Each structure stands twice: as C-alpha cells, then as structure tokens.
Image (cartoon, rainbow, N blue to C red; front, side, top):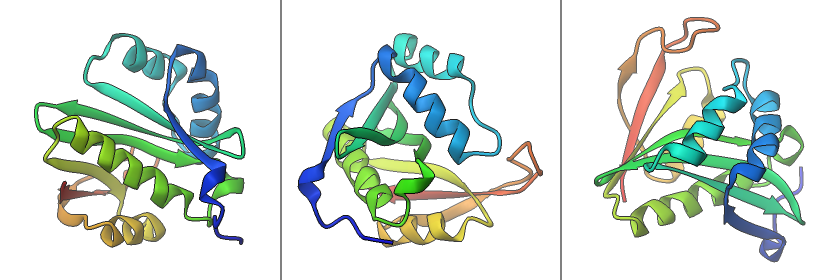
Length: 154
C-alpha cells in the first residue's frame, strides 16, 4: 500500500450535522458493532463536550475521530478510516491532529479503549506515546472481548 506522501492532499475540519451520514458510512464499514446515526447526531448537536474531526483525503471524507473533552481530560470515543484508506498513515495523522486539537482545548491527558486483539491500533497508539493503563473486562458486546485502556499525557 502506498503511504501518504502528499500531505497537501489531507485536510481536516470539524464535523457538523450534515456530515453524520458520511460518519455513519465509515462507522458501518469499520466496526462489527457500529454506533447508530442517532449517537452521532446527539453528540454533534447536543453534547457540549463532544467534538468530531474529519480527515479529508483528496477531497473525500476518508476518516473521523471523535473525542469528549471534559475539564482537562480527552476521551477518544471512536477513530476510523474507510478500509480503502488504511495503510497510508492517515490514521496516525488523524490521531496526531486530534491530540493537538484536544491540547489546544485545554486537555492535559487523553484516554481510549482498544480491543486487546487489535495489534495494529495498539502499535499506533504506543508509537504516539500512549501507555497501557488497565483492562475493561468483556467490554465489547459482539464477542465479549476485553478492552485495553490506554492513556497519554498531552
């Protein structure tokens, strides 16, 4: 797979209500238990702690990252790319941008949960400085898999 050398082809923007359909498409293609559209509408329209960042690659929404920023802690809710955009370091650039955005908003730490079996994601998170913090037993409802809690100081 090609890496994403042309950084000029990448833009970021804050998601709005009009972007929910695209977010749901990414969500449905990325996860075995996707969030319903209503969850994204609720976050974008009424949750003052929530922020969704879109990554556009060559003019197309290729991925998104959601975060809740409460006081000085940022919690990643979801991060996903369309399958055809994986393997190009776009997930890394998206997470780096979200980390910077959360820091600008006053967050001092960031946390997330990841499936214990998701080695590519865990590798990315460790590369960006995340550390293992604990286990949430049977966190994922589709197969009762545990989640690894990871965190990083921003």
